[in-house]
Image 1 (cartoon, rainbow, N blue to C red):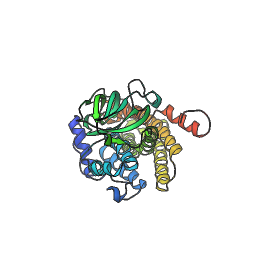
Image 2 (image 1 turned 90 degrees about the horizontal axis):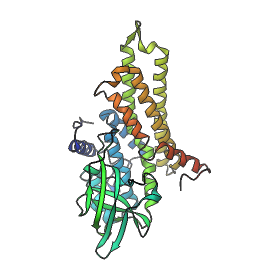
Image 3 (image 1 turned 180 degrees about the horizontal axis):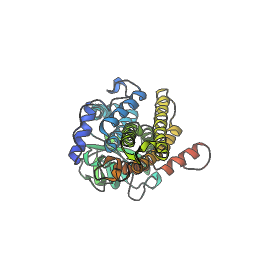
Image 4 (image 1 turned 90 degrees about the vertical axis):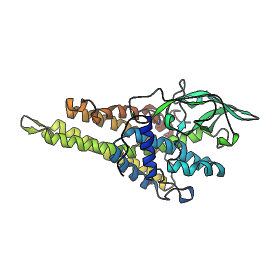
Length: 356
């Protein structure tokens, strides 16, 4: 991939996203009829890892995944012909930036606690409520927003310039900092009824499917970043000498490096297993939860080990190795926390009620 625009403010984040879209990163695993390459999820995984190696920007990777799994694929799976004609080609080209809005200040990941309301009126659909920590909000042209219509969780396409829609750039978080984030406030936001996505009450299954895909594949790109992380640590261990011996000769250090390599390759195996299942039209509910749980915990441990090996150098100002710790902490939360993934796994095994 050609050189990306530099990191910086919200406008720079938007430029980096558009640059990736123009290079075709959004078109994998999408049929040619829908405007994609007609290739596989296996191709998508490979492409995203190459992007991760190129950009070393977990925020950009999070932004791209929010756009794909939160908006593009729900539109492919649930959009009608007219909605696809209006939005899909522009979403794939980067002319439109999107994502999805689920989390609310009081609800977190509890779908039963979501309070945003949609009301059907003669003029259209009237939306009221508040969403929080929504990826891409400051740069989004539109978002798939989940609200209750007739007390049933449903999905709606809301534009950033709709009257009564406020797409804010605060609050933000330190992890994956280049993924722009913020609140959404809808105050008597009136949209046409044609902008309801899917049937009334389909919101739960749409969210579950979107998050399954995000959990399965978001670490494809992060593997590229972790590959750089590992190479950086190896290079440092070769150059740094302690008691006239290269640092890597120290068994405690070499074992940490071996474990980092094992974690990276294990994540690759999990992500590629999800791709294999999708390419064979198999369910990925269990595999995606396992992938997300293992990968998030492995990324955090490898990031901590990398800082430990580099010592004070790893904490130097503007050293990206230190920033990866914050990114890894964020990875334990996005797409559902590690605890939620455990709930899903045990529920699918027939014990507990963590997945409904």
